[in-house]
Amino acid sequence: MILVPQDKIDACTARGWWGTQTLWDLFQRNLAAHPEREAVVDAPNRRLHMEGAPRRLTYAQLADEALRMASVLSGAGLTKDDVIAVQLANGVEQFAVYLACARLGIIVTPVPVQYREHELAYILNHVSARAIITATQIGKHPHADMALALRQQTPSLAHVFAYGSSPPTGARGLERLLREPADAARVEQATQAAAVTANDVFTICWTSGTEARPKGVPRSHNEWLIIAPSIIEAAGLAPGSRLLNPFPFVNMAGLSTNFAAWLQLGGTVVQHHPFDLPVFLQQLREERIDYTVAPPAVLNMLLQNPPLLEGIDFERLRSIGSGSAPLSDWMVETFHRRFDVQIVNYFGSNEGAALSGNATDIPDPAQRAAFFPRAGVKRFTWSVSTAQKIESRLVDPASGEIIEQGGVPGELRFRGPTIFSRYWNAAELTRGAFDADGFYKTGDLFEIAGENQQFYRYVGRSKDVVIRGGMNISPEELEGLIVGHPKVREVAVVGYPDGLLGERLCACVVARADTAPTLPELVDYLREQHRIATFKLPERLLVLDALPRNPVGKIVKHALRDLLASKEAA
Image (cartoon, rainbow, N blue to C red; front, side, top):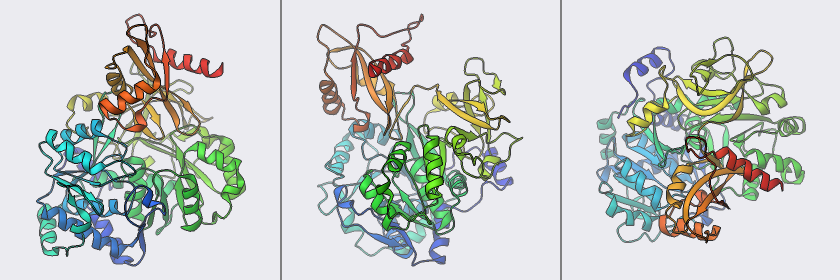
């Protein structure tokens, strides 16, 4: 299935930005070059979230498992352009699943393990998923049972595949199926029939904004591969690099580095999930890691506790990525001075908007903590090649005028080969995501900075979205659920700052009568009545007589955030 407009394909191909190699082609190249190199490694604490002992697979072993998975999928009648939902904790299995799908042209829609019936039912129906691959249990939750229960409300869902030794009745147990010999001839026939191209859709990832429902972002093989240099070049990664992945393997943050860049590097991915600092540090010490990412608060804390960093080979670990919240110039400078480690400052979105602030382009640590290269502006040249392939500009959200002077906030917009083409089955949302010139509207506010106006500086968001631990959360979605509570008359959900997660959620409510709900009552209601992902649950409750509104009746959320800040200060 090709969703990218043909004129964009022609333009990107003519300029050499997009090619003909698929993700499966790249894997085959790596397999031929170094079959015995380690490809993927499980976390040592795997048993805490997924059944089975931790595994380490070479490229040859991963190729065999991907072949067996392709045999299972093709044997179940799944073919090119069918959509499969994948809800798994980070592990080696994901690579086998994704590679099998890349080979057969099956579209993968990866789903966070925290999603419950509320989110999962919508996604399965929205993409008409033909199958879901999950586990009998992830952590303490029976994911396979949850998927089976959703079959009644998902007419398209023909198969529930489950890892685990004792899958529930109705689920197809992958432990048994993957032990059977692969039908290599059938897989090869299916591969030839699919004739997958680099412009076919590979994934549909999910993002949240102001809308009440998540939006599906389809990306082709080429659209993934064009992103990889933003990581490889910004972090200075060499072929064969070993990457430690603490991000969920479901979106831009996880897949751009640990699938697209991994394939281009022919390297090794060491999986980590969920984030556990002692395990993370153990892996940094024991796994010969060349590159990883971590939230700013974690990096700050590590520098404040030097014994935690003892034993890490900083001769190998020369760069660390960070982002999703402002960086401390002290942290960036101290990692460089103490360990000769460069911190790469990232900004990005599932839609393909990306900026990489590295030591080559922004050598001053204080500047790198605050600024990003003004990529995609013709008079500036940067070391990361994708910066020369995109266009970016700031636009006044009210007037629509392009901003060229420094210190004036505007919405950052992008156009080019990294940017997605449309949301899945959402024409109206797609139209609203792009301006008249075809630039994607990020909803993020930046201003032009630097003595030569060569930088962008992040100043806030124009879209009402909360980012908690790197996961985007739609306040509107939560508001639509909370207002159904019998004690709630009105509600507004806002984020408030948190040193570790970036933001947490506060529900600001006006009670229906004299009795307001308690926070535990709201949380129990959301858990029991709507079964939403745990990371979306509010962690503060503010009860008000009325919500602040502007003259036309719109809730003024910045006033609520200011009120929360004043209560925190008091």
